[in-house]
Image (cartoon, rainbow, N blue to C red):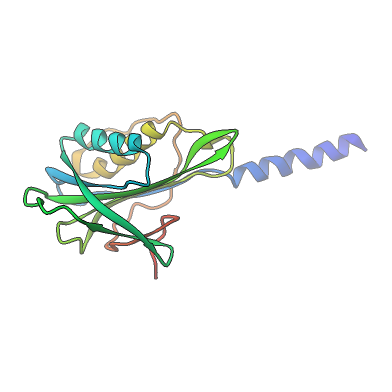
Length: 189
């Protein structure tokens, strides 16, 4: 009886863990990446996320400038508004949201980075990460930001593939033009 119970529980546990995988969606730059990206600071997100993001852009030869912005959540979507006035030298704007949650220790549960043209009417790249409930949720947030930004630049820069220790499934590589993102990274209808 005990052997039969174990034979039933092992496949059930493996099936349950398979559904807990993290997912990320990448919409990469389809044209040459912007030379200067103005990153809209999100005060509700940890400063080290902002620092990791600007460093990742710099790694790919995009100069960055931090600008002030208000992020307002309406209808489960983030609507950022830039409140800086010195934007003449920006080639694109980068926005982001990231959430941490608790399970024994804090971990980054969700991150969404999107880059728009200077009119904010067209999304020119986006990367979204959502962790599953499995043991792969304890990732290094800086390394994940590096990976997401790398994937946004990869098609236009001819970068070679990299094997990431905490790699996740890429579920989309299609470009999008929406300028709003929901809390969970989906695009509203």
